[in-house]
Length: 159
Image: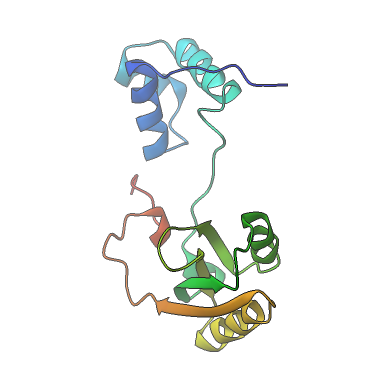
């Protein structure tokens, strides 16, 4: 079954902006800001969920609160052309990999890894390197976040 499609209009975009800033904002608060009633905002949010414009709501947690104090980005280089689905299988086996994507350029994929400390990061990297089709990895350890309000930094824009 395919989802119906929609193109968000200006009011939808304003509602989305409010939800991105703080997903816990009430429909009444959003309605007051955009000039709609709470039920009208709810209908629009429901429609955007049904059509896949909104795919979910989430909680952003400071990684250090969960013991993840080391963060790195790892370029992965494969022998031959490793299919993206095979790379996806590998990354699902490592809970420390919080994001992964195929990329253009020399590397085949880019992994975002969070670990408890450098030793833990090294252990994760060694597990990744045991995959027979991975030729090499190049790592960049994050020293600090320059945009501290980004979700990658474990923060939200709502303060």
